[in-house]
Structures are given as structure tokens and as C-alpha cells.
Image (cartoon, rainbow over all chains, first blue to last red; front, side, top):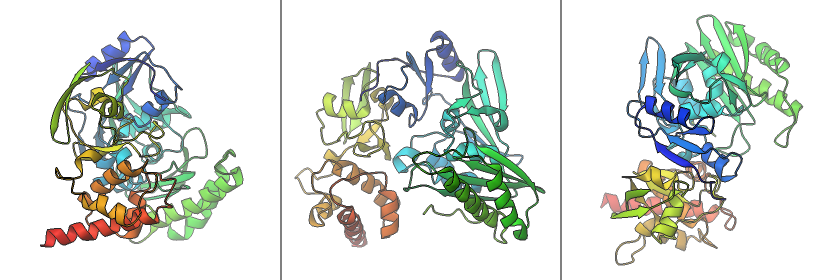
Length: 276
Length: 159
């Protein structure tokens, strides 16, 4: 179907975008890459009165590491994240997102704001204990991954707020594994694992409304099977047409085993693998 | 809204509603009906075009967002004298199409693939073409065509 009509505002700055959201009352939406929003409009699942296009806002395409943290501006596309070498876990995960024509438009911040529980980047943000920077009418604030995600497609962001940048701390070691029915589909289950010092954060996507976090002490290669079993015990997935709860739990165990295998392996962090 | 954009090397000005997608503008505003619309929500890949050299779902980008952009569509692939692009020739020879609904998107996706990766193997071709759905061919002819065109195009560059 065609999208319902809306007022279009091409924002010239972050302040201009926030002002346009405020002017739209509660009926405005940010348009970034459009790879999630436009299907929602075309399927008439939402009818926002105004779209605020941030694609021409200057200064939102930064991609750099400072003090061990990758900072990605709100307009960094999945293709750029997949192609960078500053944060190998983020690059590996981004390569699983959709297809080339999706990665060329879709943005890192947009994926986090959309908060699909099966998407790759929300799991990576939480595994790395990252955060987003948000601008709103009352100024800017920093929202950690642990508080950003409220439920499936629900976030802590207000109606008049816009993400300006994403912070992803660089782990000392990492692993990422995912299973999808077809190349480029959303994951049935995905697992992102990141070690910071002697703490390991394992995040499972696709098993709950928000990416599910389990923390563990330093994992040696000999601990992998035990931790994978514990993570599988800890998740409480639902059944749907893509897989039963038992299947998702079995996938969680196997994918955690693979991700931790990479994380603990002698070669970790491994070279960025090609998705199957 | 008034927009200006360049399509297949030709500058155009047209008037679009904000809700018109780039695919709508190409088809209805510029009568370039080679870009096909299948699902209209970003799944099938039939409407894939190149915007500033990058593959884009033309159904997921509003025409107003293409202001000032350079767009390449299937109509720009053949030479001015009608000589087919090596990919078009290979799709024909290898039976990479039957009904043709998916073909423009397949071709534009393959154009981009061979531009960034001139000699992909069959697994890479399958992975990179996976975002374009074909309901006729079973894909074998399409993979054959991309592989064959890659060889042809690499041969031409060697000369």
C-alpha cells in the first residue's frame, strides 16, 4: 500500500528537529533511514501527522573511538558500521542486518530507537553496556542500554526526543552468533558476548521483549558449556510461528556456546566473520 | 514539493507529494516504469535502484529525500544504441528471468555487487542476491547469469 499523508519537515539541525517534534505535538516521528518506519507506514500500522527527516542534519555521521568507546553519530548507516574495524563486534553483527540495500540506508540509531527484540544492534548495545545520547526540549541526556529498552518496540525515549549519537565501549574479547531462517532475516535467536576485564556480558536477542542479559565471571574455554547451559536456563522464550520455546532455548544454548567459543578462543577477537 | 534529481544522467524537476516514494516518482512522475513495485514495504527487492551509487529500496525512500541525488535505474543499463549491458545479456542467455517482475531489481542489485566485488563466487552471489525475491526461476539461472556476467566484465577490463 501507499503511505498515508503526512507533513514533511526536512530538519536543518538537531534543535530544529526537536522543535518540529514539539510543534507536531505527539503526532511526529523522526525519519532517519526509514527501513523500519516506512514499512510501518505502508502497512498503515501507524499514521503520524508529521515526519521530521534528519538525513540532512550536518554533524551526525561521526564514527570514531575515544577512550576505548566507539561513538557513532545518529546517521551512521549499517553499511558503515559493518565496514569499520574500530569495533569488530559491532561490525560482525551489522553484517547480519538485512541486505545491502537495507544497510545502505538503515541507521544504527534508528535500529535502537525501533527496538525490535530480534534485531542485532540492541543486543550489541546491551552486551557492550553502551548508551545513547538523546536531545529533547529540556536539553540532552544519556540513556544507558539497560534503561533504554522497555519492551518490544518500546523505549525510554520521549515523543519529542531524538537520538544524536550511540556509545559502544570496546570489549577486550567478543563473540557473536545468530540463526535466521534465511540470509538477511531477523534472527530467530542471536547472541552477543563481550568481555570487559574479568566480567562477561552475554545478551540473547529474540527470546524476550528486550535483549536478555546474563553476566558471568571470566569465562575460560573450559567454562563455555556450563555457562551456555546456564544462559539457556535463564531465558524464558515464547513460542511463535518461527519456533517453539524449547527450540529457542536450544538455539540459545548452542549460539551462546559458539559466541563464547569465539570470545574465549586463542584467536579472539576473531577476524570479522562472513554471515553464512 | 518541488524536487530536482538526476536520473540516468538526465536532470529532472518534478512536483511530488511527501508521501510519494522514489519508486512512485520514477514510475508516475518520470514514466520510467522499468523500476517495478512488488510488496511496497521493503521485502521483495523488485524496486531496487542505485542512489548516489548505493543500492536502495525505492519503496522505502520518499521522493523528497532524493532531492539533489543521482539515481540509476534499469533504463540506464543498455547503451544508447540499445546494446544490452553484460548483465542483461547474461540474464537473457542463462534464462535468469521468466515473468520479469523481479528482473529490474535483480539487475540493479547485481550491478552494485559486481561494482564492489567484481569476481564473487556462487555462495557470495547467493548471499548478496538474497534480498531480491523471484517466484519463477528457482534462482539457479540468476546465479548463473551474475557469475557469467562477472566473467565477461572482468575479461573486458583485462583487454
